[in-house]
Image 1 (cartoon, rainbow, N blue to C red):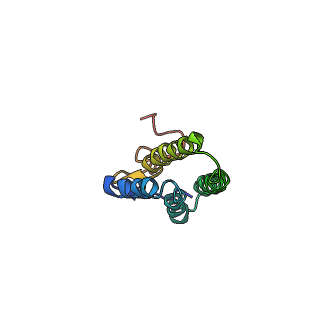
Image 2 (cartoon, rainbow, N blue to C red):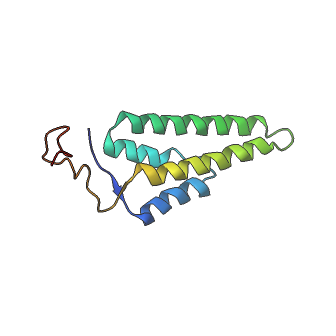
Length: 114
């Protein structure tokens, strides 16, 4: 399926703010939205990966909650933020662009032979 999911800068910033404000616990939510809208397996895999990251973060946080602070848990959350924000800005299509405008209506492989 070749569905497009356009998003402006404000929408991308809003999804990014959700990830940061929730301390990466809701990092899977923007990717669930993308997966439901586009119905592509790659998007479902991305959402599942961020779900696993969230579960690992919760389990890890509950294990080290009784002992001394663990700086690796904070680094894990920051890396999750960075990766999630980069993927949010790259997974959504730019607003107002067309997919495959060069090859639209052209036979496969012949778009550059004009």
